[in-house]
Length: 125
Image (cartoon, rainbow, N blue to C red; front, side, top):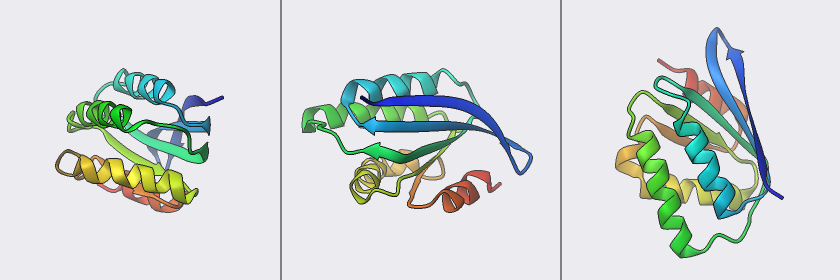
């Protein structure tokens, strides 16, 4: 069963919202997570830890809705989200979403294979 935890953490003196997303991905949980992130407010720096997330069945018709939710979230130009996923399939799905939302995602959403790389991008000025 998929689930996520959200908690604040100070990283190099910057407030970061850590999201640990684990279990087998499904559309309903992803949509709920995006809605929860949207409620965080302006200026949020979010580190999505998907290192324990497993690929799930997400239908093509659902993927479009998920991408549109991400686009609406990152359209708020003060939010920055770094995703890291070590699983090649989960990483690939995130990269696909990033590329579909390319114009909106620039400087607001990036996907990485390792946590240190994601944090470095997230904390840059």
